[in-house]
Length: 220
Ligand code: C2R
Image (cartoon, rainbow, N blue to C red; front, side, top):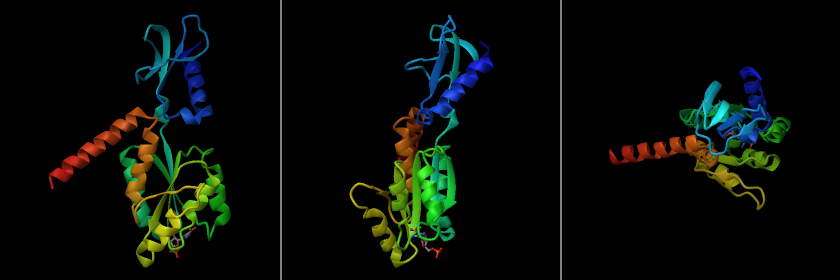
């Protein structure tokens, strides 16, 4: 079995199990050319070609996590963009891909529902939804998706208090994790923390971010 065939199989494995994408994995082909096996507790080694490691004679290592995480950032209007761009910028700092969309539960209900319904299948792991005024967008995302939804109340009227209450006061059963008014950067950091639960590399980055933050704070 050639390297490319092996690599292709591993890649397919990752694609067929998107929930495992964040988990770096080392796959091994035994000397007997048995089936691909996941090597438990493998180091985060990456080798694109065949190499010898961990006592396996023929090993192809693929950091499945290299495919990366994907977070959706949706907002009710283009006028929310200056606030919501801060979420994208923060995710970028952690090398997390984001897809930014304007969708409104009020003005484009069909598209909003369709987006939420298919979000997980489209590879998103967390949804961030920002809206101002009567902010129903995050709640509608949560109603149609099992993914964690983080709501950002936008200050578009009444100093954002209307959006804060509309976002945070979800009925029991359909939660929206709500951050501060215009707190898009924190929404991104919460998304990072959620993704970091199953991603050691990301956890390290988040820890470093906190160290840097403490240093900056102490420096006044
Ligand atoms: P316009 O600037 O388009 O009039 O929007 C938007 O998020 C925005 O802050 C004014 C405000 O209306 C909000 N909006 C919602 C929703 N769709 C738009 N709250 C929704 O679906 O919840």
